[in-house]
Amino acid sequence: MSRQVRAVVLCEDRAHWHFARAFLVACGWNERQLASGIAPTAKGAAEQWVRDTFPGELRTYRRKASERICLIVIIDGDRQGVETRIKALEAANQRQPTEHVAIFVPCRNIETWVGYLSGLPVDETTAYNQLKKGHSRAKPAVVLADHCTQHRPLADAPPSLIAACTEWALRLADLR
Image 1 (spheres, rainbow, N blue to C red):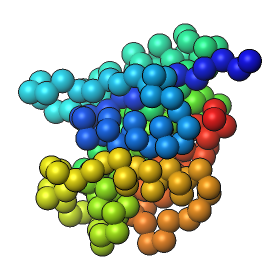
Image 2: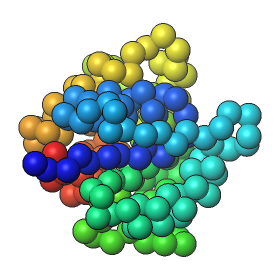
Image 3: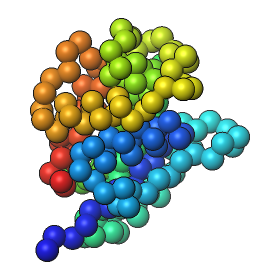
Image 4: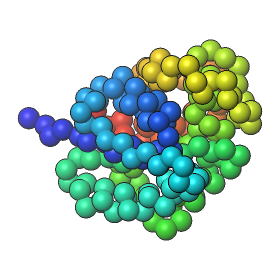
């Protein structure tokens, strides 16, 4: 019998968490295998909290890697972009190619991905604040899971979303 894989999701807010949870469940993960690390509200910049928390979570992952655990980080690209955010996270401690540590960077923010996956035209510079409230994160996450797990390309997708599917394939897909 294979051991259960556990995932720790480090993210800026509940919108990230709800999207990640729906995505992982659609990919076949059991919800009880998922743990969240969400930035505390009213404690300053959530992006900064994720950057500050990442090194400790990476150390924990490395201590427990034999337990088949993975670390998933979701941090908005805002106006920085995918590469800049990943470099900032890895400044203190780089991920190794074989580690199950994935970094997903929705640019401008998670609402960009939600909009695209809901069939809306989007770009990575506009803030889609109208999608923050009252818009399901689960349905778009299931659409993304279907594309990523079936290796189907996303037509005209935002570059950060394509990068996320690549990150999934390289870092996490073999766990399921």
